[in-house]
Length: 298
Image 1 (cartoon, one colour):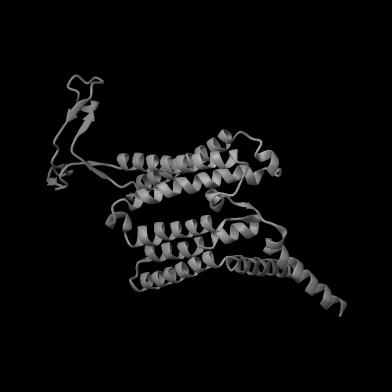
Image 2 (tube, helix red, strand yellow):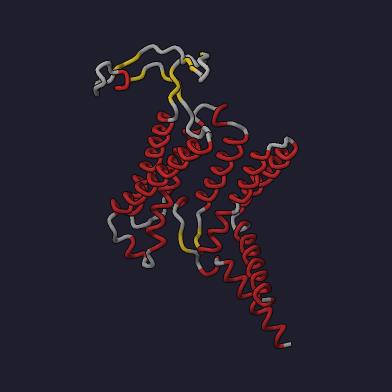
C-alpha cells in the first residue's frame, strides 16, 4: 500500500513538473497565462470578500481551466500551437470572469455573440485536428479528401454548439437559471390564437407590454416594451454564429488540406503530435529513473 502511495505521489510530482515545463515553453503563451492567472486570483479574493460563493466557485473553476491546455499537451503528448493556446486561454477568461462574474453578457451588447462565433471557429479547429491526430500516418491523412476533412471539422463544431445549447436549456429548465437570454419582440406569429383552433398562424403586431396574472388574480404589467421571448431567439442566434465560425475555419481548413499541410495562418490553430524533444513528461520520467539508478548504484 505504501509503495502504491509513493508511486502515486511520484507520478503527480512528475506531472506537475512536466506541466511547469510546458507552460514555460513559449514566452508569449506563458505571459498570457501568467497575466490571466493573476487576474483570476484577484477576482477570486474579491469574490471571497463579497461573500459571493457562486463567483468564488467560478473563479476557482477558471483557475483550474487555465491549466487544461498544458495538461492536455503533457498527458496526450499533443503540441497545441501558440495561437490556439492563447485563444483558448482568453476564451476561458472572457466567458467566465468577464462574461459571468462581471456580467459582460448583459453590459456589453454582442459579447455572447462574439464568444459563440469564436467557439465555432475553435471547435472546428479541434474537429479538424482530430482527424490528423487519430491518424498515425500523416501522409495518408492528406490523401483524404480535403472536403471530407472540412466537413468533419464543420460537423464537429456544430455538434458541440448544439450540445451546449442542450446544456443551457437543461440548466434553465431544472435549476431556473437564465442561460438562454430572453429577447423582447414586438411581433409574434402563433397558431395558438387561431379562432378556429386550426393550424393557421395569427400575427400580432406592435406589442407594447406583457401582463402577468398571478394565482390570486392580481395583475402585473412587466413594463418590458414588448413580448418576452423565452430564449428561442437567443438559442438560434448562438447556433447561427457558431455556424459562421465553423464555416470560416472549415473553408480555410479545406485549402490547408488541399495544400497538404503547407505552413499558413491555419497552422497556428492545428495541434500536432509532440516531437520527442518536447515530450516533457517522458523527459521528467527518464530523468527520475536515471537519478534513481545513480542512487541505487551508490
